[in-house]
Length: 450
Image (cartoon, rainbow, N blue to C red; front, side, top):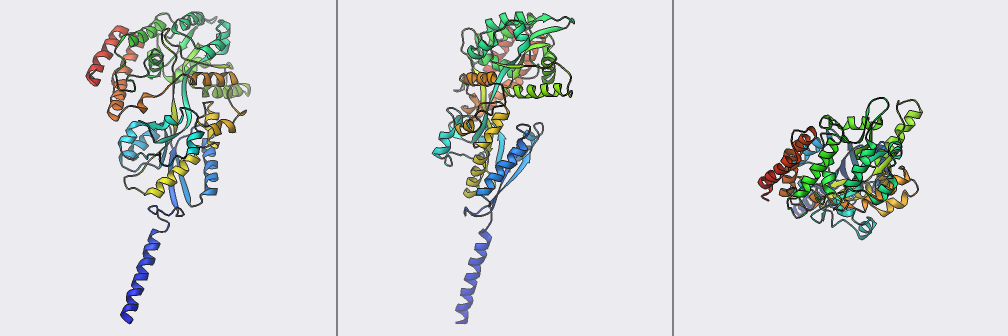
């Protein structure tokens, strides 16, 4: 009897130890167990940190057992820190970024399709949920649609007789832009030059936006076919060179940093700036208030959002995509319940109230609930909000969402190693459009076999 009693006591002890070992751990499949979800994000807008705290507080009212641990990264250093963590197999559960095929290739990106309810899917506006997909599988929930455009100084446009309202509504061709640029380029009374357009010499966005408006959605199309090897890219390069030759853009464009082009726009030295996101509207309104308060010296500007002009024989195409939260597993997997908890947090940070980020940035909403909640509370000027919505009708879906990992990596390499030095050579006059087009064709053959 004593032996049976001892055995029974040992069995009960083991059951108790096992139960204690499973309670509250991240590996538990008990939905009521305590868990911690880690979020790495950025200062999406000026008050995003406070907004994030509010969203998490609301979430914890319904899910007190899930702790949300956040870290606010800097735009300069954050991407490097994330890459290190991802390569080490220990990324955060949620990371603020657009989806990237390289994330999926690690095997650590969390596929979300099984967690998406019909209610969530139906809340997303047409075409927006796809901005968080790679090859048709969901890995991210977009928080807003980013949008690249050009921006104008209303005073200068009006003085030159440019019908910018019509341009916002109907777009404009390269020929129409050249006609406008001739009117916008002049010598001012103080002897300084007023340019029609200014961009910087270090970024690729200028040629990407223009080539996209010449029938080439990217270096590769969504099937992986090389695009920059025919007359369309030569036409694009020739259009840019003509802007330089006519004096519509500064001859020193190759040496201009992004901050300098902004300074020139603020100083009234250019009518139009590229690239300009809709948030410029809010930024410049705040700058105007600072000028009124004596905090900043300079001319107040009335900002006009403008579409990028398109080739006369090609349709308009707006550079857009989605940015929001991407979900990850770790090399040491924390289990299915943790994955479900991660998605719960992700949805809480992307829901109706989270639409405040799109509103603050004057960007298009991605969910109907967001549009409904912030209706009538928009921060941008109505004419520019309408222009952004009109441009969104011509969205060019990012090619990288469709490409496989090898093609996506090759395209990125081509842009960095081939396009960037060539566009700088075009700006500086070191190479002609014909020479650059031939270089694109030759290097494309080498890298893509096409």
